[in-house]
Length: 384
Image 1 (cartoon, rainbow, N blue to C red):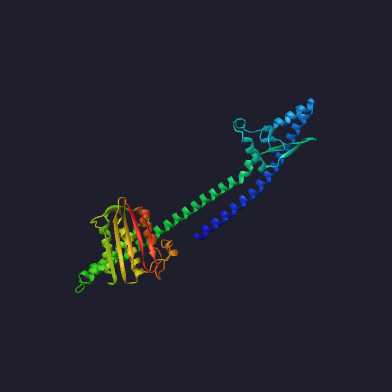
Image 2 (cartoon, one colour):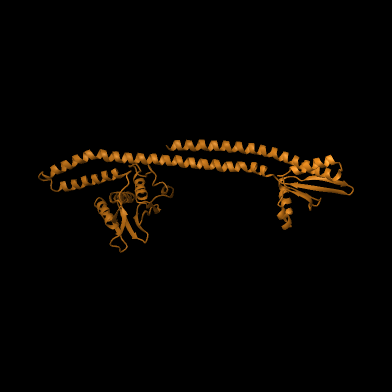
């Protein structure tokens, strides 16, 4: 799936590069042609002005008037040899010309950068030369800006396509996760039923009084695990529960199965009860995974602290261990499916925990802090 997404990205990138590159070269070619044509138009316009100033022929004057009136899109400014505006200006804002004395000089500076001025010699003795500065027409500007606009459109298209592909892949992943979880729960159902039957039979067997209760607890535990898997993919029912009681239950369960050298501390910050909307079995699963990961990180000794804080808009639960910690490069990977530093395991526990908290409880689960050799703190945030 990741390879397919990578191939999609590569193909889209290559197509985008080809389109934009071809467009840029073609647009520049068209822009040069338009620029050459506009310079010819300006030259003809300037020569018609010169002819109109020096001829008395009626037909020639009529022709020059037609030529000068046809230019409706190229802005032109006439100056003397010292670049002082000296006469005609065309296709410029007449209101600004009249109200802003610096307007024409600003335009001259702008036109000088866009095109070389056309020089017209009016007399040789003394030498009098007029300069005609002209700017780009709106058409030429649009052609030059077109590649930028197209680049934006192509980039937007690629972004939308990638988001659509990514969303589709995530949806497929979610369906696979849900399907696997439900199938696991279904497969566990038959042996669980059988185990329950055997436990009931063992209750009537003499000498099994101490063993049967423990077996019964383990069977109930398996039923709970099966129930959790069965809830994956379904919208869980959230109920108002006491977070302290919920976490105390899981701490007691894990503590009984942990080495005595591990010290458990549960701090409620003076609160006797902290209520939040949770799904009990799924929330227990998250706490259980965090506690088990902490025990694995501590390798059988150290302290495990659970700090529950009741705030105005949220409840925070910090699970802190004194274990080996997480390296900085791995902090961003711990919630990714398949990532694990253990010799055993699929690397799915924290992925499922994050999904349960963020998708089902609309909360947050993240690594608050971690330092190699000193320990790690995971934080759960439940919004009220």
